[in-house]
Length: 224
Image 1 (cartoon, rainbow, N blue to C red):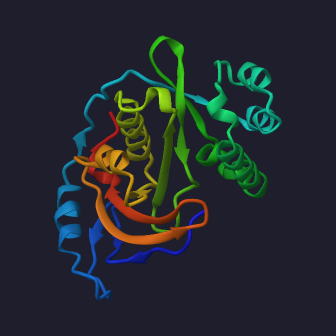
Image 2: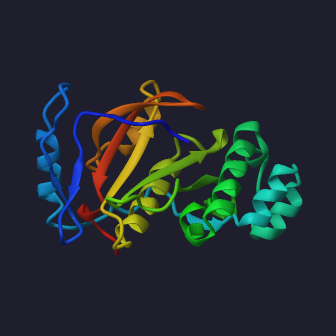
């Protein structure tokens, strides 16, 4: 889904599971800001309350298969919530196919790959979210979320980010959370601000083009 990251630094994992700062071998800059962030990771802090009350509803294989066929009513029955046209756009269908292929290749890690519908006020489905896969060899997971146009700039993206960070912090296998954002996506850059994310590099995504790569220590947050 993404290409190799051209990094300005990296996290290393301590024996206790939390990351520590490592020197950079790259010429683009020092990793001093990483040291500051990881020092803060020694003191977990509770995540703030999101501006919107949301809940996640799993979109299992049956729901994604129905969405690929354009069967919104069938997908909604399977998921137990009323999904919208936002779930059958070309971009959304590409994602469902990608996730189904992941699940077929690695069913043992299904819980890390099954997307979630984001349900907001009055039971309205406002978008979808999830992890791009299980933690890698150093405990990094990448998050992704998308809010339907009618519900943007209302606090749903921030609330979704908080819930993903909370879930990541609750997993002992996770040490680092990654988010990749287009440099011209001002709204998404604003969403992650204030959570300790540090820009660590960039990558070229086949679907989205140039992306900035941000990471934060999962050990920074309390899962409660």
